[in-house]
Image (cartoon, rainbow, N blue to C red):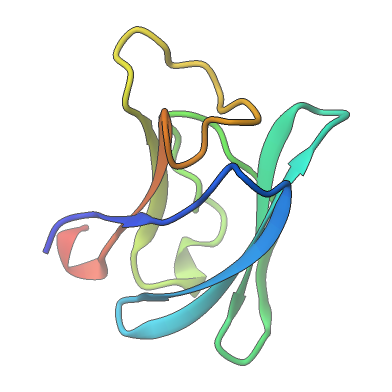
Length: 107
C-alpha cells in the first residue's frame, strides 16, 4: 500500500475532517491562524481522545514526529511544485501542499 492523501481543503479557515487511517477513524480539526499565517491541526482518535494539538503544517515535513507512538503510521507533507517549497499559504492545502498518511506496513 502506498501513501494516501488526507483530503485537506483551503476553502474554509477552520473545519473538522474524520478519516480512516490503517482501519482506525481519526478526526482532524484543521485551522488557519491569521496572526501566524500558518495552517495547524489537532488530531483526536475515534473516542475523541486528543493525540496532538496545535501541530503546524510545514511543507516537506514529518508532521507526526512527537506522536508517532499514538498512530500506526506517519503523517507527512509534500509540495506539488518543485520550484516552491515554502510552507502552505492560505490557499495551498490540497493544492500545492498535500498532507499524506504513510500506512504502518510501509514504514
